[in-house]
Amino acid sequence: MGFELLQPRSLAEALEMKKSYGEEAKVLAGGTDFLVLLKDQKLKAEVVMSLRGIRELNFIRHEEGKGVTLGALATHGAVAASAIIRQRFPDLAEACAQVGAVQVQNLGTVGGNLCNASPAADAAPPLLLMDASLILASARGERRISIHDFFQGPRRTVLQADEILKEIFIPQIPGRRGATYLKLGRRKAMEIAIVGIGVAIHLNGSDQVVSDCRIALGSVAPTPLRARHGEEILRNQEIRDELIEEAAEVAAEEASPISDVRASREYRLDMIRVLCRRAIPAALASARGNKVEGLS
Ligand SMILES: Cc1cc2nc3c(=O)[nH]c(=O)nc-3n(C[C@H](O)[C@H](O)[C@H](O)COP(=O)(O)OP(=O)(O)OC[C@H]3O[C@@H](n4cnc5c(N)ncnc54)[C@H](O)[C@@H]3O)c2cc1C
Image (cartoon, rainbow, N blue to C red; front, side):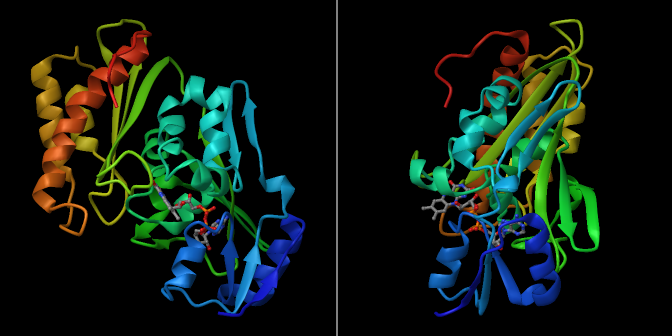
């Protein structure tokens, strides 16, 4: 499997290369999805453009009052270890810390996780909870799109042939936010999610009434998604067990899982309910500043 390797040193150089080669130049970041697909001959590449020499894409930047920006080359390991992410967006840190194992986290990027567009991408549910936006760049200029509009289906995104993902922007969220990401796999490491669930609870003043609730699901539909009807059940409510049950039930109804080698459709639906029942109280406790012990 020989290919021509392009190694741009700046974003501008990469965008010029993408302009000339278009679809023909396949983009490589950490390579943890790309090289597996290439080896298994599920991907053909005559020209590969590696982003790894572009240092300006490798950063995590916090701007007070605005939010956090991840460069396209920020790895899962760097994001999971970042103090600002752990403090403000623990669900994203938890998701990145559950990708593969340490070796994969050190190479794999959050940007690559999104661009690969697997329904099971672990970083996607937390970023959906945060209404993150993505900056897509080409020699023609840049455009910002909501993560909600990025995925089109398994391994399909809105990226154009001459575009690369440049940055992921997470807006600052007002009020107190508690959030968690729970992943069910057949084992604890080196495992793609059977179901992944992110839940965020926002409190604005009272510790009792939830001002906003967000639920995101992975691995249970062609793309990661928000369970917006389930969220509605809890919004502006004082959380009670019956409401959590109802939200879990409704969230499961919003999914359309398939049966595959990892699990059956029925099992996945059941696990959405189970993980919702665990994640909602955990997110609430974290918003209130408490911890729920023994959750994994
Ligand atoms: C052993 C193993 C375990 C794994 N476990 C998990 C897991 O638990 N959870 C999980 O979610 N994933 C898992 N993965 C998949 C993979 O590690 C992640 O999806 C990772 O985040 C991919 O990032 P990358 O930088 O390696 O992307 P690459 O493999 O370099 O690229 C992936 C795709 O995105 C495109 N791309 C990458 N960056 C850009 C960009 N900036 N602009 C445009 N296109 C781009 C590439 O062209 C390619 O199509 C695992 C992989 C392995 C090998």
